[in-house]
Image (cartoon, rainbow, N blue to C red; front, side):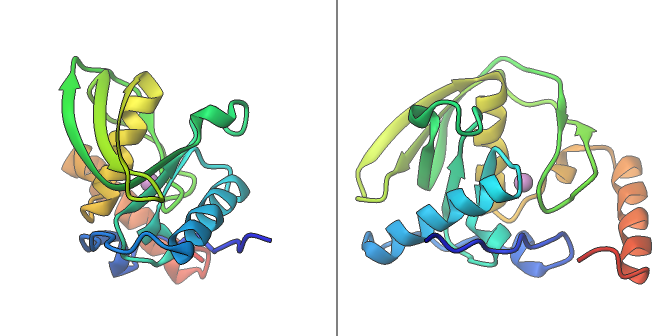
Length: 172
Ligand code: NI
């Protein structure tokens, strides 16, 4: 049975620290990736980065179809954005910032180069939501949350709301 990890919320420094590259492609990594998919689905997400379960490694999982298409399950180990094209506007959320959504402009089409659980390199190109997920998850591995891409005014407002929730014991 896969292990379901709790999602680390904004405020934990692991979310704002660049993650370390993966160098071992072993059974432990395979198990972790399976656990990450299970944890992502449990949290109703379409993307999850390892720092969001408290593991500071460059691993992300994505499934923008949310279980509809098994071929859409993407494992991104040590991902690098290699190409971006165009622009898209749209709202973005994050499992580590539950209940919040803000408009974030992202590239319309993104190509990412990443390793799979065996260490083999692949290129994946995605449009729209998938392009957004590639940017969002790669940002996570660089210790960046999407609120970096919103205005300082909106970010400060969000941080004030979170502080209130923390004080009230509702940010757990
Ligand atoms: Ni996120």
